[in-house]
Length: 108
Image 1 (tube, rainbow, N blue to C red):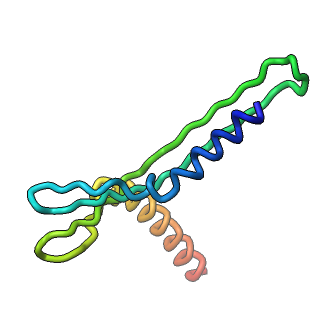
Image 2 (spheres, rainbow, N blue to C red):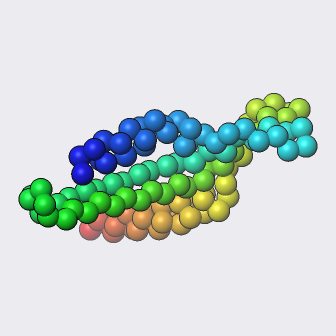
């Protein structure tokens, strides 16, 4: 079990920046470099006895933030609008809720 965990940790550590910034892609003379937030989680366990079966599992998620675009206009970042909306909705809700509590507290 320990060897498996070490090999898994080495694999994930080695991926590093390559998993956040994708390989450049050229489309009609425009170079795109995709950008994403990547997170991994792993776990392993056993019953404490060498002969007892153990278990391991893992998972990951990648959230696309957008892409760096290089063309005749220069280099710029183009955000993924769907990701922005998904992040903005809870942020706006929590911010509005917090401000309503602050205003309510200041009125008393």
